[in-house]
Length: 583
Image (cartoon, rainbow, N blue to C red; front, top):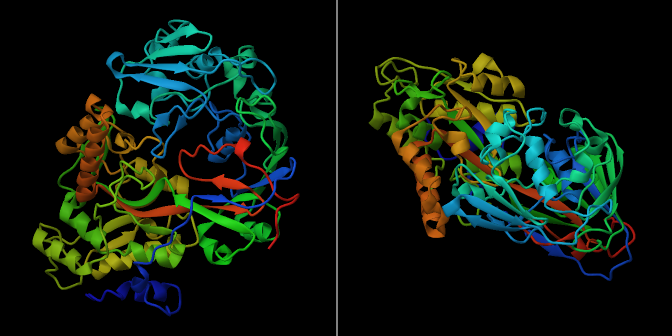
């Protein structure tokens, strides 16, 4: 077996059909940094139209927070109906948004107060009934969307309402026209987080009350003529192509300085040329094209850590449907922690991020993303490429190559081959998967692709979730969301715990995260740091790559901010030229 640190460069280069001019591992300490905000100089023009490129997937046209299932639809909605509350850099709810929120852990209550004298973009008054009506829609037995989660089911009386036994929700107390008090069955610190347990929906009750809930998702009020209270008012839609907005004169923060906003769907292969030609003001940027736009002069590149990570998961059991929890099997070969750790040390994620993502993805050291500034433990070491350590771990644990075939046997002296499943989601998917196989082989672990090929995405997730016995480990990615509490991925009684790992220690750590003690900031940070330390040691699922998300901002846009929790509003932004500036 080779032990050379530069082996990574050699095998990746061979897969690409050539050699690398610089050893990849020599680049692994390179860092790329981006500003998250920009201010461009220039005198404001009066009005103007902002051209926004929605890069990639076309929107489905479901323009309502209670019903959309595609993120691109959610982005469109954010321009005209931004939601109830604001949050800070850690996605922790604060009073920077529309409503003031008061948490009362002792009584398991939240009080929501909205400002008086605000209006919908159709000129109708907005009051607390517009905050209440989403509970009666999402919780209704006829509701057809996908939002009936903890923010609704945890409200006192919701079970009875959802089952049709009552017409009222006992936990919703309308104090006055602008105040709502909500009582919950369970109250954990997750409720402090955006998306963690408090509904953010504000919907026009004066319109929706007259539409049968079973018909609402396909109604014109959701698909064609939605009403909101945000900075822009939706005026026209070209299905799957474009949405046009005008400035909302009724916006509670004041009418925006620009006259209009046009959002176009743009193919990723065309966006760089479109930006350089001066056709768009704002656009997300594909990281695999970084070299083509990094030196652009007519727009600024803003970036921040993305709220997702790539991972490799290890199967250690199955889902027990009858018990409603995972059935961890300590006898499975991957239930040996030393083997999982050895596989982690055998791969060079720094090199993968440098070679295939131009440094815009980088080695992950935690199951919590860096975007959570306070709770993420930046000092945690994680795993780095160290094949010597990998082989030492195998030997110490008793994984030895007794028959001289280059692969270690299990602890019973029996040969084993692990089945690796990976989805075919990008041009680099195949070469990265093949690199993993060769890197593991290099330290003596025999791994093969399930069925000999990458899988179509839907088939991949179905087979992983159904515990296909051919799959021993699997590669994927997921987004954490606004709540860093990942019990939703790793809890003993959570179906999405795809590794099927459970332990008393992890149960105790989850109990701490969900206890009242984490309403104290110092205790919360310590609980999350302890959880991260345990997870990175046990690695039931190995986080491999963190990522940057990039946004282009044309030089005629006065200012822009992509940081989490930014308070910059469209009322603060103006244009300095009649058209986007070309290169």
